[in-house]
Image (cartoon, rainbow, N blue to C red; front, top):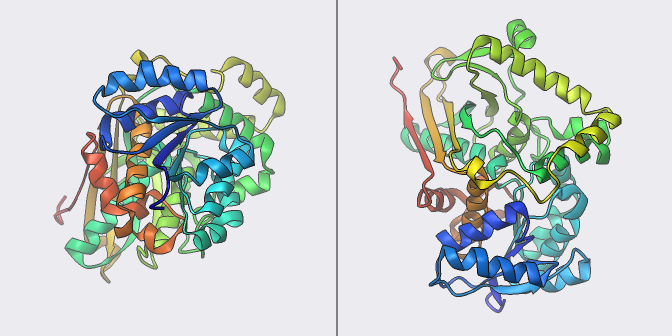
Amino acid sequence: MATRTYEIVVLGATGFTGVYIVEAVAQFLPTDLKWAIAGRSEQKLSTLLSQTIKPVNPDRADPAIETCTLDYQELDVLTKKTKVLINAIGPYHIYSEPVVKACAENGTHYIDCTGEVPWVRRMLLKYDETAKKSGAIIIPESGFESAVSDLLVWQTVSEIRTALNANTTDVIASLHNLDSRVISGGTLSTILTLFSSFPLSEIQQSFTQWSLAPEPGKPLPRPTLWTLLTGLSTIPGLGQLTTSVTGQTNAAIVHRSASLLSYGPNFTFEEKLRPRSTLFGILTHYFFILASLLILLPPLRLLLSKLVYAPGSGPARKEKDTDSVEYRAIGHADDGSSSSSQKRVFARLTNQGNMYKFTGTLLAVGAAVLAREVESSAAERRRGLCTPAMLGDAFVQGMRKTGMSLEASVLDDDE
C-alpha cells in the first residue's frame, strides 16, 4: 500500500453520483490527499476538474486523471495504483463485478453506494475469501443505502454497551422524515433491471434478514394480525409506523454488521417508516405490495424504463438543495430483565441538504477512513466483505465534521 500512487481513486467520476462524490472529496477530505478521477472519457474528466472540482476548493492540488474502461485488464492496472477505489458505476449488477474482482485480487480497498442486495450476496460468495487473502476490505452499500441505518444501529448498540454494559436485543429504526421526492436515473434503472437479471427465488432469498451474515441469527418476532393486514404498528418512543421501502435492503447489511461485530445472540433489526397519518400508512403498505408485484411483469418494466431519467442523469440540483432526512431508533438492552422492563436507548440521525450529496459525502469520508484510519477499525481485523458500521467511530466522527448529526442516549423508565 505504501508504494501506491494514489490514496483514493473515484471511478465513474463524471456520472450523476460520481460528481457529488468528487465534490465531497474536494470539500471535506485533507488537502494533501493523493487522489485521481477515473472514467472512459479524458475530455469529460478534464471538464469535471476545471468546472466542478477547482471551484469547490481552488487551494487543493488537482487530482490526476486516469482513463479506464470496465475491461478487466485496465481495471487490474488501475486498482494496483491506489489504496482505495470508490466505485460510482451502476447498475452495479450489470457493470461492476470486474471492479470488485480487481480490487479483491489486488488488495485494494473498495467502497460503493449500491442497494442491490442480490448482487452484494453474489459478490460475497465469490470474492470474500479472495479479498481476505489479499487484504482488501470491500464495503458495498455505503451511501444513503445502507450506511445511514447501519451507523444508526451501530451507535445504538455502542451506547447500550458503554452505558448499560449489555448486549442488544431488538432495534427498531424509523425513517422519521425524508424530505426528498426525486431519484436519479441510475437508481430507477437499477430497480427495473434487477428483476430481469436475477431469478425471483434468488431475490427472495437475498432479502431475508440474515442473507449476508455468516450464520443465521434470531428470527424477527411474528407480526400481529393488525400489522399483517395494514402494515401498521405502534412502537413506544417512535409512534405509529408502517412498511419502509428500503427496510429489507438495509436490514441485510445491519444483520451482517450484527454478526461480524457481535451485537448479541438475541439481536434483531427492523426498519419502518413514520407515516403522516393512519390512512397514509395503510396506503403506503399496500402500494409497496402492489409495486413489488407489478414490477415482476416484463412489459411494465419496459414501459417504465422509457419514462424515467436515463442512467447517469437525475434531478436538477435546485430540486434537491432543500432535502433533509431524520432517522430514529429504539434499542433494548439484553440485560436479563423481562421485555417490559428492559432498559432502552434512543438514537437519532439527521442531515440537511441534497441527499445525493449526502451519499457522495458518505462515500468520500468512508474512503478516507479506509485510506488513513482503517487500522483502528473492525474492518481492518477482518478484511473481506465488510459493512459501513465496521469502520466504527472514525466513520461517524468524520461524518459529524461534514454536518451529519448522530447521537444516542439511555431513556428514563418513564420515557
